[in-house]
Image 1 (spheres, rainbow, N blue to C red):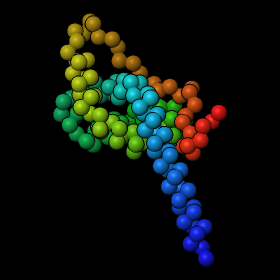
Image 2 (image 1 turned 60 degrees about the vertical axis):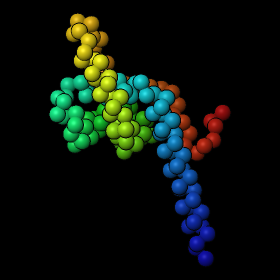
Image 3 (image 1 turned 180 degrees about the horizontal axis):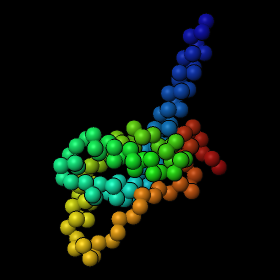
Image 4 (image 1 turned 120 degrees about the vertical axis):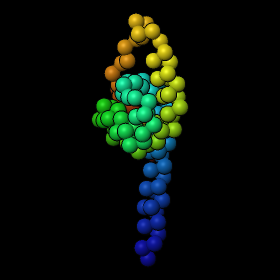
Length: 130
């Protein structure tokens, strides 16, 4: 008697969650350079030893996520953001190495973390907003 309504709700929830995850991934890909800059700005002061410590890195990634505007934080889960960061650690190491290898007088200051939030966030329902 209740099986169909419950399974329908479960199916709709999984479609919504799946859409949210793909939209989050799409958002990360679209703003990858800004996100990378934000992460690098926090990682450049860490020692080599700390760059290998997963607990410290998790705290750094949480602090970067906390700096994002509220709509971005609500849309982009901390878990998804941390997964992105950990999967891109090799790229972050390369960027840090390049940054530290440049002459100090030639270095551009590392920008404060920013992510474009004025643009509309992707739809999580799969529908086009137009």
